Amino acid sequence: MGTNKINILLVDDHELVRSGIEQLLATDPDIDVLAVASSGEEAMRLNDQLNPDIILMDLNMPGMGGSEAIKCILRHKPDAKIIALSVYDDGPVPHQSLSIGAKGYINKGFPVDEMIKAIVMVYQGKNYLSSAVATNMVFTNSEPEKNTFSQLSSREFQIVSKLLEGEKINDIAVALSISPKTVNTHRYRVHQKLGVGGDIELVKLAIKEGFITNV
Image (cartoon, rainbow, N blue to C red; front, side, top):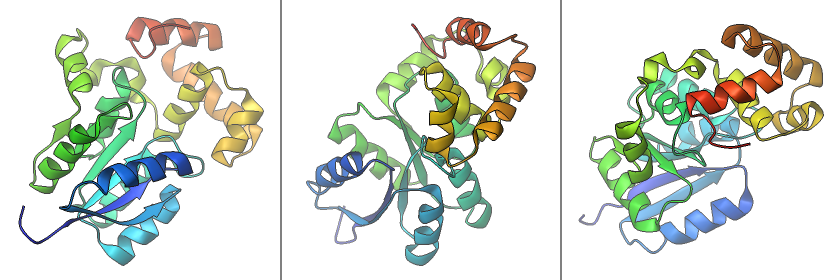
């Protein structure tokens, strides 16, 4: 790729994940991790300071989640190139990430060569989906814009994800740095938006929509 390295800002709230990705990327001589961030707020600050070529953004973080951070960064720098990272390779998460402006989406179970390929392609102005995500999109019968969960806000989506993972209200509040009352308010709005009578119906809907495959 020549002498110029692709400068990366890596954003993930888990130190082990950050370290692992950083070490993997260090194997490529054309890529340089300029800085790491553990929150959306820190990512915004470092992006303003460093102006990286690519931002690798974890979607599920406490405080300002990755989706909200992507929106805020693109609001100030519309040409920012962001690749979303998540544990999901199906359901509405990839669609939502691309719809808010991410240029790429990678499942965290990626091999390192796929991540490097994604970085290079997005750096060159192209879009990138990890192979598992692309396969699921091809073989799904539902259109992204028609997915029931796509109507949720970033925060609502974050809370739904945690509810479906079996997390308690108090634990969600601590993880997202908000009050249990606020979590319950968002939960109530989610139930109204999705037309479900409670968390059991929410789980059933999530399975039906392909958001989760088992409980």
